[in-house]
Length: 73
Image (tube, rainbow, N blue to C red):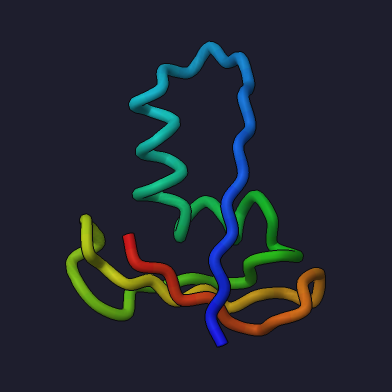
């Protein structure tokens, strides 16, 4: 069964909004295993070229109660 969640968080940063968005939306599959390996062990593309509409597969660590996340960009 799929679930949908949302949240809002505002932070001040010296990094520009477009650069931050690109890191979170487009490069998260690369950053997550480096920044939070206990949550995301690995990630890779399942469908697409990595851009909008692509599907990514995340293997989760023991810190969360599920093993896999699939995300459509």
